[in-house]
Length: 261
Image (cartoon, rainbow, N blue to C red):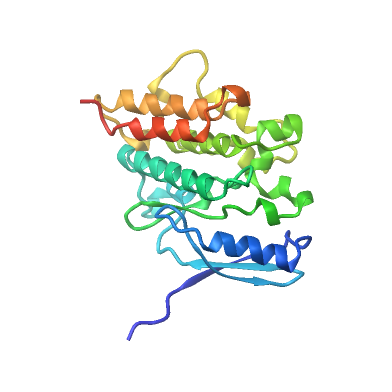
């Protein structure tokens, strides 16, 4: 006889302004979403003081741990093939959210490496998606990554391409192995934001030195790695007009191969 499946319960205290009806309607909508690259919500609990969201337990760790954890303690590093697979999976999950939640300006809104879980086969599962409508606006800038975007800082607004900006930052984090500065600072007390971090990655010329050494590379994979780096940079253009939209980004990412033939 097997035991009951393990569950994960997340407590949220910055949703106090949303009514029970609004919260239940929105979370039930999220609970109907099903995609191989989304961690599904299976239950929720509403109280005025706090909200609980319940999901299945994934017997592995987040992408952030794989990228920035202590490998000397047995945590394996990710090779190029694994990182490409993860980026492609994240892109598919994002596109699904965009198609299923067309009324949300930023259907994910909180995309970062700690909100991407990896299962045993290193398939990515997005978490903490679709929460913008139920988060208190006064807390949104401190909590949601979308509210740390260049367009929010400059114009006090988020847009359809805001998730693409977060995705671009994630792509660069995966390829370089470096943690974006504004996630360390949480946007507080620092003038160093993700846009500055992005431009520090590639200065005056393209170089293979930018890639994470632990990723490994072969002679016939360098071109594809550089192609994906350029896609990442195009996704996190500060100028929204120059930034890829999600559909274009996903199409270009799916064209990237493990190696050139």
